[in-house]
Length: 363
Ligand code: PMP
Image 1 (cartoon, helix red, strand yellow):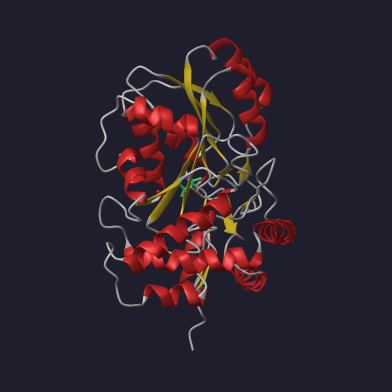
Image 2 (cartoon, rainbow, N blue to C red):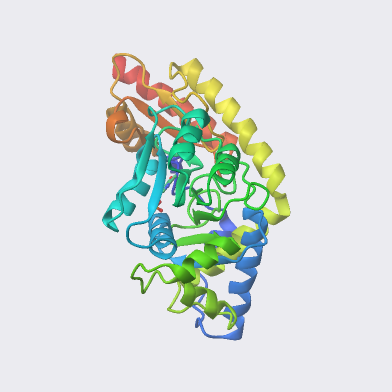
């Protein structure tokens, strides 16, 4: 009998059976009372997970669509922005901004390190005047680093009037994040990681200041227009057909998250992260990031082994899916997730298989 498939990638992640079952239910029409009630409940429960009283918008798109929608709705041509990046997803902010004709000031840090608050402060001190927004990444999935979002947000508000925009696509629901207490203007997340759903939904929270920026923005937008999304919430609707099944499934996943309690989940995820890092080290994969996040572990591939081949072999021979490094880290690190519905026993099995693969590659 083939061994069961184990998904340990940092998104998509496995989803609980009751969430999976919701995806198989008959489709509802999206402009009905039944769907409208589920939709509103999803938004309310997302506020609980985001730790915010701000409105949350739901979009049928992957996380990158949520990021692009932030650029489309908050800015105008010529606006001054800062991107603090130390990995592939930090760089994504830069790529999106450039594709909108903007030219952000870049604070780049080596991959594997967190953004240095001192360097960030210096940029704010010299460039803070007329700065429209800073773009940050909560957990950098390409390196396994957690950035000091609370501190970076405080520094931004101390030295400028800029909006703080945070990608918490892999962080939300696993790594501590307090939207209101940390004064985050916009937080972007997605369904397929800590939120324990299939890929296809993005969520953004908007502070009052972000809503004002949305009204003032001169960027062109249609599908991404937050004004239309916000307005239609009053009718318990989305402007266009949402991914109905994903919304219904999200409602179940959020029910489970609420039942467990977000602080308990943060703690559980953090414990699992510590354990996974130790186990990886024992297997010969020393920890890569300097300030590791809780939602995934990244380890150096042992000398002489090829990480890309290891990941390929693990999937082919053991049906265990982990992630290779991205871009310049390809083949050099492996990444194992411990967010959402991933349990210690799954990681244990995955690491046992990884050890066999490594051994086989050496003999
Ligand atoms: N940012 C981060 C931190 C991510 O982990 C990801 C997904 N790996 C993205 C952005 C992009 O999200 P998506 O692939 O859903 O568009």
